Amino acid sequence: MTAPLPDAAPANWVDRLAPAALRPWLRLARLDRPTGIWLLMIPGWQGIALAAAAHGALPDVGLLIRFALGSLLMRAAGCAFNDIVDRDFDARVSRTALRPIPAGQISVRQAWVFVVACALASLAILLSLNLLCLYLGVASLGLVAAYPFMKRITWWPQAWLGLTFNWGALMGFAAALGGPSTAMTAAIVAGAGLAGTSLSVLPQILPWPPVLLYVAAVFWTLGYDTIYAVQDMEDDALIGVKSSARRLGAHAPRAVTAFYAISLAFALLAGWASGLGARFTAAVIPVALHLAWQASRLRLDDPSRALTLFKSNTWTGLLLFAALVIGGSRG
Image 1 (cartoon, rainbow, N blue to C red):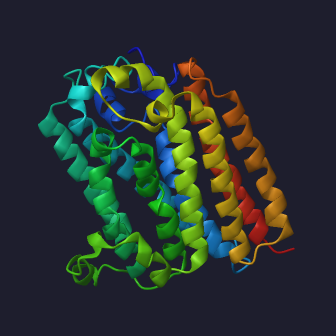
Image 2 (image 1 turned 180 degrees about the horizontal axis):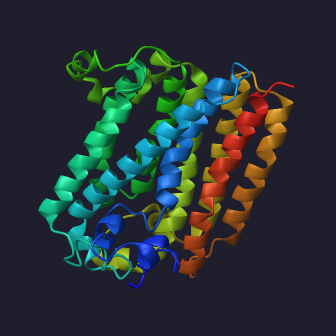
């Protein structure tokens, strides 16, 4: 059995069960560390649940499955692209030095082929959704492409990750609105310059509830990715990589508390704007308690605890998804 990477679970299935030849590719896709896949998928599920809840319905299971598959593929493509861009940095950081590209297990050319293959497969899923969802998918490409470079130019790459990683909240809501397949209209959208869409136009193409949910998710990510960045503070300082954890320093735990409080407020506003009432509000209480627990446990001198707290955000997202389903259910 291959030794797991430092931020992978010791008993992860890739290192225990996968054939040796496939392990570098599965690691490149982060399938040995599935937390990121969940965190990319859950905002889309929440958007689907919010749209359904507004009509007193349950989320469409088929749509949830498509978003799960799309998230897995896009997470794989995004991680491979990020590793291509960051291969020199990764080689100098203990937590990332054994990733497949810096370790020489996968070449840069092979990684690019992997990115393209995953992106094409996810495009096939996107084309099965409605035109508005395709519009939003194309509009996200600029955010996705720019993210790996943010740590070089801003102290707040975690905020950019929030803008990028939670776009699924908008797409999930849009997909749940229904409408015809976009396979016949993809060329029209591709020629419309949608990748330059400003965030300021979102309320013009979507109602306020999914926009509020998106803002909530952005601040949620700003909080949990600041926790994640605590692991690399020393290495990042040595190689000159910027992060919110480094910028905030000793104030990071209080800042995470503030980010989570803002996220919770916008999540409540999203539900209330959709007509969800006391049942939804009560169901959000476990979300609030979990976020408060995370912030209270964060210690800058304990990277292993930071990783554990970060991974627990899968439950945070699923608890809010459950709250939306509960709040919208009839009976």
